[in-house]
Amino acid sequence: MYLRILALASTLLVAPAASMAESAEDKGLAIFQESEKRGNGFDDYASDMEMILKNRQGDESRREIRIFGLEVDGDGDKTLAIFDNPADVKGTAMLTYSYRLSDDDQWLYLPALKRVKRIASRNKSGPYMGSEFAYEDIGSQEVEKYTYKYLRDEALNGQPHFVVERYPVNEYSGYTRQIVWLDQAEYRLQKIDFYDRKNSLLKTLIYRGYNKYLENHWRPDEMYMENHQTGKTTLILWKNYKFRTGLTDNDFRVNNLERAR
Image 1 (spheres, rainbow, N blue to C red):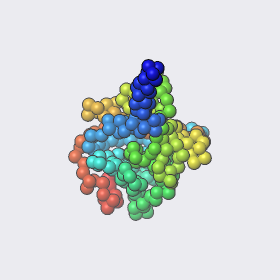
Image 2 (cartoon, helix red, strand yellow):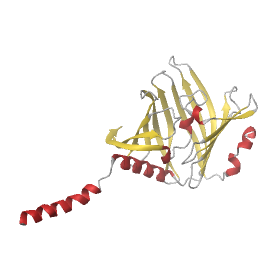
Image 3 (tube, rainbow, N blue to C red):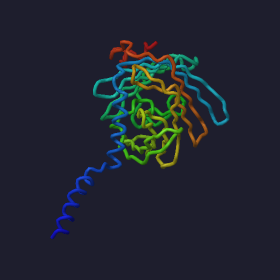
Image 4 (tube, helix red, strand yellow):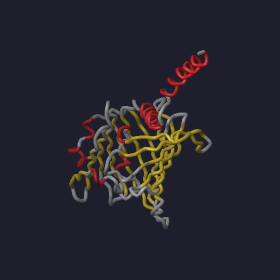
């Protein structure tokens, strides 16, 4: 009888601990929820961007872009990109409305055609302005756009990181999955491996040179995307960040794209 009581007590003690064990899916989701929470509260921003494109032979082209962003309470952000150089893309403007629970809306104004083109959901896996970034990479990465699976803890550049696999919810995504490294100190994205629809490694994105703004908002100085299948690369350099500049919804209207300057 005494042994039976001990066995029963042992079962009662172990069962709650087992039931509270966090699944790999729940842990992966929790990591990205924390990352998103830490990124909230910037209100709006403006920044200059330089995009450097290289092909396999090392031939280089550059683009100069101004970026404006607006935080939307309870949903995805709004982003406006205006191309200033070179001359063949000057005046091109792209507007993105990101959403948590539905496909993003994206519009592209092409000055040569003098018209605004809406980018269909099934075309968002295509290259953004000739770069190695896809249109779907440009929108804000809302947590609800993926499902998640925590893989492991791993050192990267001498620092502890979470490694999480995420799977796009959108059926038209160009990716089957992405493996993401986030540093454990600040939950910042540090590296992403993108796998194509055949589940082959397609691209790797590296974030470099984080700086802190508004006391707790981190932004990288560089984003380096390498396409392993074509040998092409795109380096994005971020400069002159300004936050809480007073931007409003009126600055992100589709009807204003043709007049974006």
